[in-house]
Image 1 (cartoon, protein in one colour):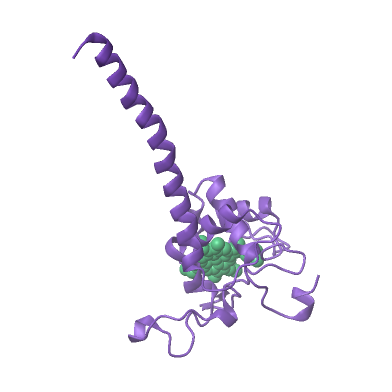
Image 2 (cartoon, rainbow, N blue to C red):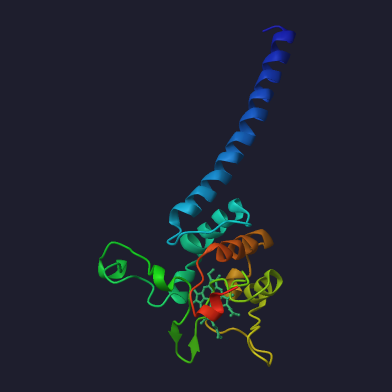
Length: 181
Ligand code: HEC
């Protein structure tokens, strides 16, 4: 190969890589978002929200976080309990609406209130609860029990924000007063 031939071969390879890398990066981002939408057990309302973040949040909540195990009671619809060998069907009617009993503690309703805030929490409060277990519903300082915030708190800001965005997209469950705007 001549020197010029070598130079152009290297340049061509570099160009191919420069073109290929963003495609690979894009495909990964897209699949996580798409997987997120595929594993969401309820219809999502993304109006006014960031759809990519909602998809990522759905993936974290439904394929990694296990929030349904504690925050949906019962977690599965009648006939849809995989632990009983049944084809899985998550309990849509109570999805993330809380009420799971853990000794003296009860899991909370994470669905968005009428004002759009999941569990009534602002993003900053949500991140603080996920990082430090701060209970914003208590009038005296209190640490959330049972809730695995010491684990979830290790996620980065973007991941916690994605969870929050997903929780804003799920249906509100509760009284007309809770869900009304
Ligand atoms: C092992 C059971 C368990 C799992 C899994 C779990 N939680 Fe919780 N969570 C709880 C319980 C119980 C409480 C209430 C704790 C208390 O009252 O001390 C709670 C409270 C919360 C709160 C406070 C809500 C409020 O009203 O202030 C948030 C936010 C929360 N959980 C989010 C999540 C998210 C998001 C996930 C999944 C990534 C998750 N939890 C997974 C058990 C769990």
